[in-house]
Length: 387
Image (cartoon, rainbow, N blue to C red; front, side):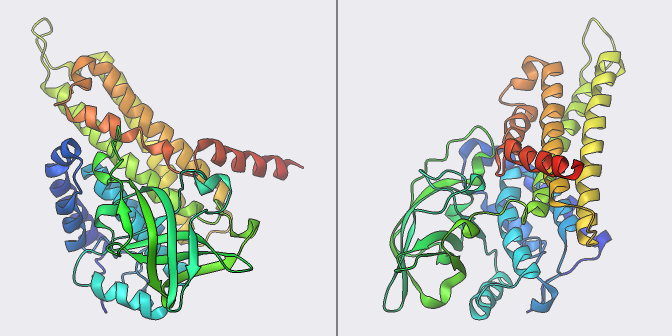
């Protein structure tokens, strides 16, 4: 089934329109922490939720660089929408790079996605295990049944779970020789319970709630991927490193939204004792320069790296991608922080968009693999190369 594949000019125009639509509702969704249905609908109508569906399935087949541009634009409008969309885009991207879904099941997903927003997400983090990026295997159990599998366990931080059509659950089988796999669970399946524990500083509308799975039954054909139990089944942070470039771009979009507000404030604020906009003062110009420098440099790292990934540049290692995200996250959070510090109390006022951008950008370095894991990989590679 064909999906829209806009040319670069059309894509840029579509992104600008969607950013504007998302920005119009972002503050209210942040206030209520409700699922951002309007924003997800806008992304779907622009063809963005299926932008990474491979050409062999009738999709646009957009690569890492275009995905980064999409998430940058969505992040500038509403990062909660962007993060939910990022999860679906990543699932389709992995299928495009390495087909592993049962053909019938993936065809079912795409048939629905052509008609309405269809959201997918991997749910892997567990209360006891923590993030799989630090090693370990799931305690969630997939038990064999006469017709398929029954899943029981608990998962944390299931982004967008209130609107997910498919939960891709990481679980260990109960077979005599256990295996570890990803099982496709319909979001509305009996036995899936959302605990509504998400009450976060930033990305409040992302709805990254915890879930409980209580004997959730699925057909045998809903096994997306499965491997032998053991170290080899643990998460490979290097294998997915390229997809952290679009994630970094999402938060650079947040920082650009903060920068835009900072510029507006600087031009509109005219203190009585100054007699002209603060934009003319050295202090504001110097800070504007620092913000621009940080964001321009970070975007060059992220978008340039993404283009090298798409070009199959074998000199662009996973460690370079992980390092680019570390630096981009640092620059994004610091750029917004600098703006807030200069504005003082107005920058931290609830009614000020900058306060929301400041809260949202704090989520950038939280995503796995976190900075210490990335730096360990980068440092290990550097020391090995020096021998």
